[in-house]
Image (tube, rainbow, N blue to C red):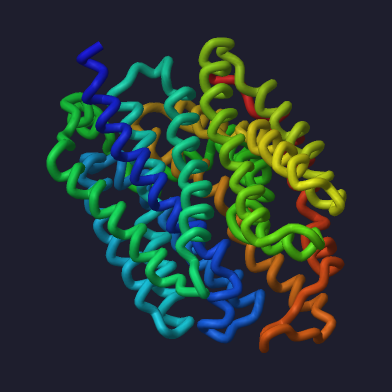
Length: 410
């Protein structure tokens, strides 16, 4: 039992870093109005500001996996977390949209490491039979980061003063970095793997991209998580407030947080269930079907009582966790020598669709805008939001079709 403590600490520091960075990543979702007022921007521009994180996050996935495969994972985690801390502070001090956008891009570039490094540390310090469980626990902490980021920032967001909320997240990340400096060390087994891992970045990518299973798995992850990324991580609070007459900003924030509380519960259970049954494809398909069924009333039953909305979103988050199994599958698809790159490729797929959807929703709102203004900024009607989100359930249908091509690896 004692021998398990240090591996848990090592993986836990990576996963907690992922959690805090996730909170920083989604924090603009509860600051849309203050950011629009601060920088004098419209919906499409605030969508691009949020997506700025994801643009570089995606681009870095081409390199993150290979960097993690080749260099000590604990050092990669420490350096990337330190630069992320600098970028978060930069964002909190930005007084122009250009400065804020570049800060978000640097956050995304460094934030690209935390999940992949956490998975790499899990592969190095634990037996492979626990991989899906640890993938679930890692992603669960990310989801809790969303809950923490939404509620914490919403609580601190007094009179639209958003900068201090962002700065306080930097202090939490600084605490983790200090713990990393004291506690982290390299796994001896990692040196042996690196000695046999002579693939270049292009060779690693060619090996992974030449495997059709890599594509089915990554695209499944992307389409399954697309509505959760676009709705849950950014536009959801605005959508609920605009389409539900009696819902307050705080109630909407709590409702959206229920997605990620459900995700936290489901993410752990789905990993354990998959490791026990040694089956993933069937559970991945069910995740897509049930996500489709539960998203529809959230989008179109706009007179839903608050308590029922909370339960519905909690259940939606619970069943949307097929993404965990896509990550676990990615770690096994292409061999140990490129496992980090393989997970990064899947992670890129899971983020790509949501990244494209965030500004797309904003552009659709601007196109549908009737010309109404409120407090000097554009006002979007409930009908505008309904139309802007009408295409999202289709993503779950595509995810279900893709899941039928993914083969069980366990």
